Length: 330
Image 1 (cartoon, rainbow, N blue to C red):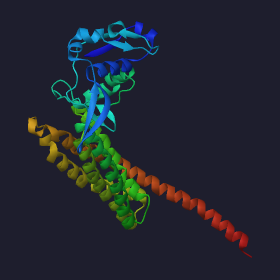
Image 2: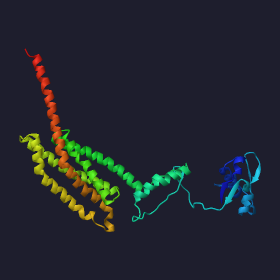
Image 3: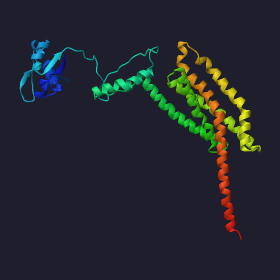
Image 4: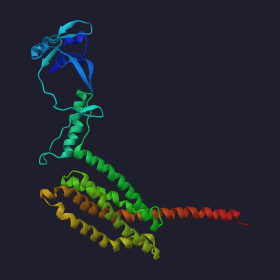
């Protein structure tokens, strides 16, 4: 049985909860006392006789007390109707919860689109109508959120270790940063692949993005190492960069193309069993190709910029030393 207050109830005072408690006391019973019987405790309830509480009319005629002390029929202040109640009541942290599950038809809409629609349009409207309602996403959405947080932390630690491993042999703080500029380029290539192919950026896509980072770093490492080797051989930095880019272009390109061709059959696969791996393959394949094209331009440019900055600082330091020697001389 459900209760809904009428307009007249507002002038008499009281709330729906007050009315409900009084009706429950009459129908179900109100605790009067407890009697100890041996090792067990017996509770005594007081309620209406069965002939006065077995029909809807009996409940409507049941007299309730108003805050002013008057006894009036329930039908005067509330509308009584039949309704459905949950078979079980679940609680989390003291709050009543309801779990809603659904299966997504991938031919019509994706899971991410459903979550976006719920978050941006449907759930805010529900909260506006019922301010006390709170919601959280569970299932695959919660697992994906937790996994992404762990991957982000792990990737940050891996990037720090990668930087340290590059800085030690190169003996430089700047060159490892130049090498690692290829990592964001892989991210851009993976995002572009998802946009063109109409794929959702999911957990496996992030796995592919993390994997492509190691491949593109290797390409940059090969190029930087050959530039340094040419420069140590006596070539000017500009000539060493051009020579390294020309010499290492073919190995870097072949490495990237073989990686792309290795995952290409999976990218174009249309079987249902392989669909969940397509985002990861697209991240790796297109991320490597896009990053390679940018690496051949970006890494030599940044290396030349570093050399120019070092030369500029050297030119600025030389006059100051000369002037000090002049002042301190005889």
